[in-house]
Image (cartoon, rainbow, N blue to C red):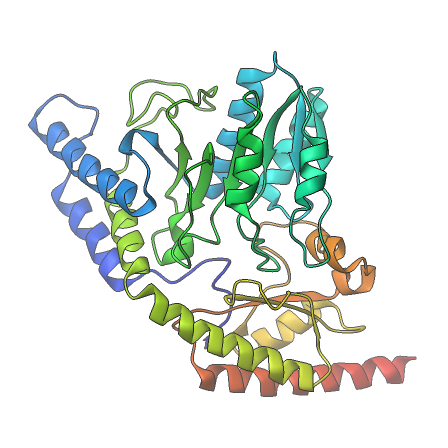
Length: 377
């Protein structure tokens, strides 16, 4: 098996899984309970929270545990807009966002909110001057992902945050799901940030929302005591402890890991370009993601043909339901490229031998399917 869909989800690190299993076995108390077993569970969660806070350079009180990035994004967006709608109903975002950003915004549009898309530069980055122009007196939220999950485009998050900070009534949210564990990110001027453990070799079903202390949001889930009043529900000690472990391991030897990924990305890009494959990801994109397009062949057809060879890639983000990639179209302005795009996402676990096999099979399948297409014409 050759797995090249790490941006959708990563395999669980063995040490992380062991932490989860051991915690599940030993910690049976409800962290909300006042007895000894409950206190023991709470103390373990508090220790894990301090570790996460130290790594991300935030305060422990600013960490809200969720079921994953989708819940975190929904909590941030709906939470801000419902809390501060008396200030205004104007929201700014980009066409590159994950569906867990776009869909909550579509929901809010039905509630009378106005969503405006900031212009992008040729390489897909937020046009800073256009952002400054678009922020109005009634703008309550700007939401921009640190890295596009489909194209790997890095956004100037610190620069965007500083601009938003000039407007006291406007909050800045960023989805850092594709950044965490792959590169360090400065959250100093960010109001809210979302991420999920499954993207950095952690367990599925656990993520977090960073909410700065000065930010108040309307909770999505009400129902009683938890690690924070912003999100009710019984905390899951094993998932929280395992996420802290995954985060720490992800940042161990980070430079060495990413240097390997850069070399693999460069090799893959060059080999595909030699075979006339269109590359959609800019060269300064995060090396973990390479988005391509193939002429005339449906993305799903190529994906399933590779699947028969036990090679796994993606068409769009795993959560997307569109028949084309809105992100690819936003950058290329080419509807055919957007309909025929594929995402290859690699990791420090990926080997050159795996890429060689992928390239060979990919080109063979492309040539075979292309010849069938020509014959039909």
